[in-house]
Image (cartoon, rainbow, N blue to C red; front, side):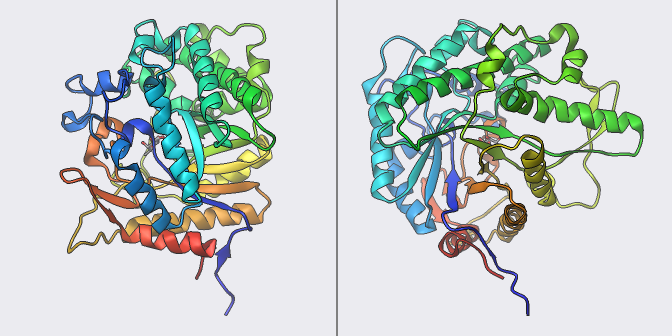
Length: 449
Ligand code: FCB
């Protein structure tokens, strides 16, 4: 019998990911200032069930227990984000020593457990005080982000060797400023596009700041949410819609990062709404990064629809396919297609899957969570990664989203993505079946059978 084992190259990094606002809680402790997500979640009607991140998974207090769980899962790495408003409660001025201290303790405890920290600087929690001055639409925020990155690099640079500047700038720009589904809840295309440019420019500024402090071997990257885009039908209009959606979602970020220009077709499409770009910006954005972080959840299938938003693109949910509790299609082949395309078209020096996972309506029954669907989702996506690695894609790591069930943004606590179940009433953690299975994956360095 031929073996169906998918054993990854030696040194492949197995991790899990979280984000500060989604797990930490302790929203007003030790000098933390408010972020745009505090404001947004406390605004009635913005988040399902009126949920907020005030307490979340109480990870701020329970991180030793959570690190013990990471060890149970055999994680070699843990990707988390730093809450900017813990470090700069008003976005500028003097850093807050208690905020820095929390992350130092966290990183030290991770290191003591043999777990490599992967630090994301921005996972959407802009200090509210900076939003009050225009937020990411204001070019000054780029410099504030550079100062913040520099402060964190000085404080943690000796113990952190893997940095991610931004998480999913597409989401921060467009869900935050075009659809209004995320903080700060704006709804304007020109603003969203200007924000996207400032996020990319701030990635460049933060990269420069980290590199100024970095030691040999330290690595800086950025994480993008990417999806292969397919036309729903075989008309030219649908094919053009798919190309446009690819421009909106993927190329708008990949082209400036890897080619130093925004895609011409998208600049033409956006017309007057296109962002103001100053001389030199694109060259800085185009500076080499050490790795590209890829967050993959689903593919996009789209059709032309003149009535659908500024892109004239409507999403289609193919019939007869499996969907997660988010309504996201389960499509592992999309991850293979994405990785091979990135390698072919943009050739990043290295890639890491910085998020991949699925929400299902898990329940604890007799002390156990039997989440076979999540396990099979992860299994099939890991096989897609393996195929890409076999074909020479320089994929170096995989981080499951998420370590814990947590605050899923506009969906609040209703959606569970964790390898570990959280009972929010008691903060009790229960490793799910998928978590136990993932522990085998990390131990075996791959999937057997
Ligand atoms: C991504 C986010 C992450 C989480 C997952 C489900 O877009 O980066 O925080 O919400 O989706």
